[in-house]
Length: 309
Image (tube, helix red, strand yellow):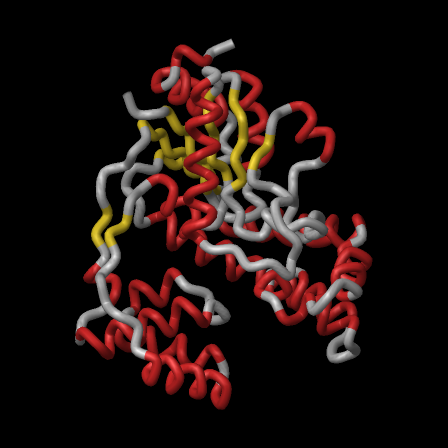
């Protein structure tokens, strides 16, 4: 028998945390974070981690695993998440994978067979130098020209994966996206997608950023900057952190930093929706509709009746 798995996805600020906490109560669930930045300690406010009270009420996993100066890969996440899913299932609780980092979540739910293309040091060096001279966005745009599907999944700052995708294209003449094959999931999965009308979502995002500022995002970033080489690592490029760093360094005003965080978060939400909309298994619900919670509850109960409290 495949282990059961409930997956809850959607754009940032849509209300995934509140939904997951309610469903975890109703179905003996334990929550596995599907957010690539929540694995880092000290990055609490800007990543909207569940509060201490929420974590005490419902077990949460894959939060606060590493210091921000430690590296972390999709493969590591996949291994840890799958291990947690099986452990949670073993004591008859419902594993719930909740978050908005599409690449991480899909790496857990599905197997992807990658093309066996040997790394080419000279191509990698050439691409790295291009990024140093022209910036990461330049390489991202080059990838868009030859492999739009892969480029749409990657942030311009995800230089390692951009270089790999360009390397594969140069060596094989085929886009990486055409060479990846998705196999059957090792889990019995129910996907739930949460969304709301775009103006309402953007309003929620703006309010959420204001709340992060009130909770002390600036102080959190200052504390991280005091740690060893925070700016040298990927974690410092997370939305909310990179903008606040620019303010603290005196490069932009506080108001401009807040505005940039809101704009960056809205753009990220748009990218998240584009990613998740290509997954046909997702059952989408409009968070603003009065009957949405009832329908979601019925759907989960129909798929996983044995967990009902």
